Length: 294
Image (cartoon, rainbow, N blue to C red; front, side, top):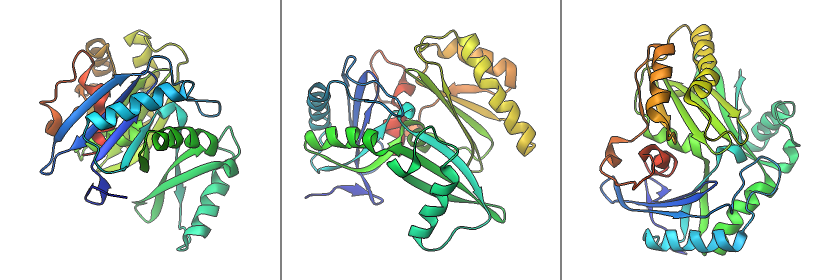
């Protein structure tokens, strides 16, 4: 099957959210050639352990239309899945075995008490960061059954999920700052918080707010603020900037978080994509699919 890649990655990315599908194609010289957004109604209910894709036929049709309209000539794509469907865990190690099979076993063992499901029934992917003389490992864990739903609907639409990323980890591709920065990504039913310093992910939390997707800015800010305090206490440096993503009530959230942290707050938009017209949706809603191509 044909492949189109840039820096070894597919040049087309597709994000499935609770209400929409986004598909984008990277331009040869950077930026984005095409962006497509399609509504899927209530066809997807992101969660860790139960059925996620309720309307398989409907989602497949929308996915196929969006990818075709985005100019996905090759079959292999990057698939971005909802944060609520994935558990992201940061683990500290002194060392890891050189052999992948042995390293996988060590990581899975450490995950046993950190998950609400059996890690042996899950797919794991991890990235190792140097942390001084030790290792900080970013692990994404997804139940095989849930991953199979998302990969299956992509295959049914005629494409191959060559890379699968959680939405917030994908969105970090938009962040270029070396100073301590917090990324807040609000989605249906959950809020993900990621804090980076000098390009390394040092803290990650997912807050479950159930059906409170339209929670008041004050409540969300109050839920988020303790992560900034914890980071400063743990690492001895304050948050220098906050990026908001997927937040319809951006202004109110920005004001409250800026007051509490003294850090400037801005929408998470990669400058390379600043000219894109997102229509009526907040531009930062696209952070996942665009970050996957950054």
